[in-house]
Image (cartoon, rainbow, N blue to C red; front, top):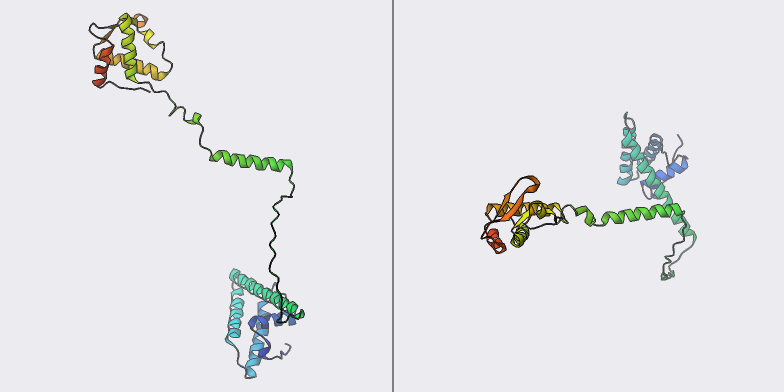
Length: 253
């Protein structure tokens, strides 16, 4: 192996030494051969020790790090070693870039008298200058419109069967039946349901008839389509309030 001859003060740290060895022996910094680099690094450490030079702790720590990487690579599964080697390569690349930037700044001979201009306030140009196919614009619009519709509350029609259903009170149908009978005393059973515009009205009318029959204010005679509803004597529409006070249902859906 080629004899290495240099002094410790010529290197600012272990990365500086490693980068020097990589460049001197033309190693691939993106795929560092850890075993070869470790041999060269340890040769430098031994030479310093033989010359009675104090070796800084950070240089010994880097040697231990290289030994750890080399040992991990001997295992059947050395994913950790590959990760450690990539991490070391990244540090060396960053250090190399910093050295290059320092050389460029030194070449400009920048002295102590340095004038720095304050950044100028420039109004940002928010004009959109990109062009897109019309299909892309249409797809974007439809996607945005769809998201907007998902945020809207459900339409009223979605609740029509729940909250928009007409509620008819049984008490109103009791008044309706008694008023029909007050005028004619007897009406056909079917005629009481002719004006019903919904199922709620049909149910409310039927419940009203049951309550009136229960209170013995009306009676139903006949069978089938010939059934007749007749008001009992002594009953009138004013008695509806007393009927409701007795606990008759007040509404039906």
